[in-house]
Image (cartoon, rainbow, N blue to C red; front, top):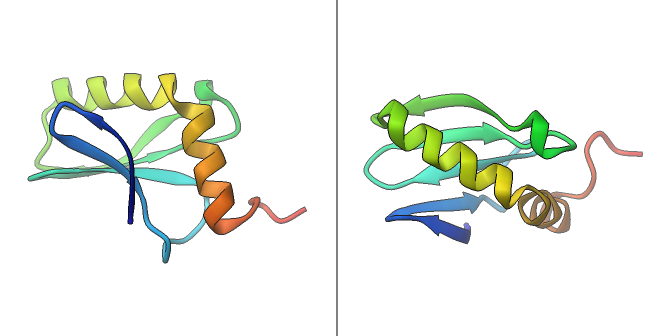
Length: 84
């Protein structure tokens, strides 16, 4: 697991042994998974546990702002998806 950046105390991570499609996890005492998509407009919440709507909004905004970095990191670890 590599931490890409922090949103307060929440770590935004990509797991090396994870599955497609491209996504990032937000982890602290709760958990959320956000799909990355091809552009920042495609970022959306897939699932969450024990995180308030307010936290989820902050995380989504941060992932949108760092979309290119997140997707590039995902591709370095997992390759392109779908495979070309």
